[in-house]
Length: 347
Ligand SMILES: NC(=O)c1ccc[n+]([C@@H]2O[C@H](COP(=O)([O-])OP(=O)(O)OC[C@H]3O[C@@H](n4cnc5c(N)ncnc54)[C@H](O)[C@@H]3O)[C@@H](O)[C@H]2O)c1
Image 1: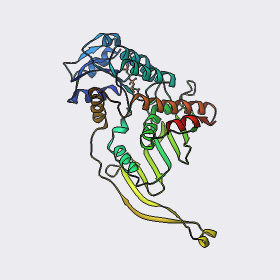
Image 2 (image 1 turned 30 degrees about the vertical axis):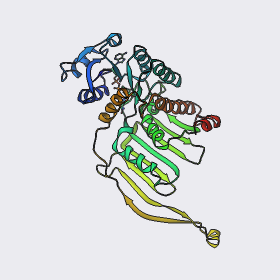
Image 3 (image 1 turned 120 degrees about the horizontal axis):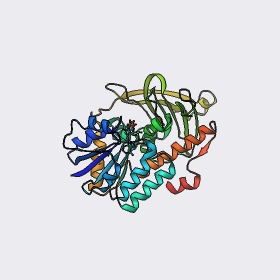
Image 4 (image 1 turned 45 degrees about the vertical axis):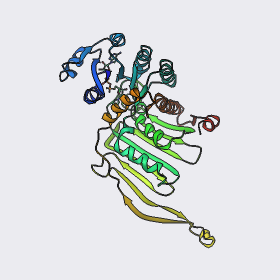
């Protein structure tokens, strides 16, 4: 049994608490939050779990093997680094940290301590994304041409991060997982409406360019009157449409696209034909992504292996987020994320 403490019992923390308490490989021993009333309320269904209002007491406890951090983004690095230095394994909520420098500190501290550092990129553990990964890796959709993602709704306004740092980690982590290579540059636009004084963007558009013709576009928005969770992956052979709000067929694979004519005569006129084939929807098992995420954290600790959503994966996402922020400040100016030399080295 891996003995876990959850730190942060606000909006998201209780989901981690419930899943760590239910996981057969973990024992929830403590929950820490500065807000004592919040702690008492959240821990009512868990009478055997210690309520702790001071994070330093978590660090001191030898009977805590791992710490799950669900506090505001600016606290992820200081809390996570301290926990790693005290020999705890660490799970951090998305985004891994509030800057590349802080994310690097976390990754470095985990290496030094030889402990597992994992980021909760929840969607990677969801049935639809797991299924899409299988389809993409099978080669069925061919070369990737474009990715188009919309994640918009009337959002829960955050005080310390903008809509990009709040919502885009979901889509960027899916992108990182599915594509498996690094984007070269980003151009992003964002605007502040509700909280103009604080400069917190609530609408943003991100455009990423890979060096091989793949383009990826992301729209994140806290002001939309309707909720949309739509992700399209366009390939040379087939395309995938993932609608996370669809009750039954959340993933559809379309055998629909263009065919380029190699007939010389035809090329003088219309070179492109349209192919309309079958649409199929794979079966997706209904499992709560967080329960798989928590089980994967425990497995990574037990087997001393890198989690799928490792600290490095979290750092890659933070690198894109930081570049997006710089581009927004430069009103859409193109920002290099990984230069050609780094891309060649990573390939
Ligand atoms: N994976 C997901 O889908 C998902 C969804 C929502 C939020 N999140 C992430 O979860 C994290 C928390 O977000 P939230 O909306 O729950 O925030 P929140 O403000 O509702 O809760 C944060 C809690 O942390 C406590 N806290 C702050 N500093 C602390 C410290 N030093 N020691 C102990 N407790 C401390 C606060 O008292 C508060 O109760 C963020 O990183 C957010 O991005 C992830």
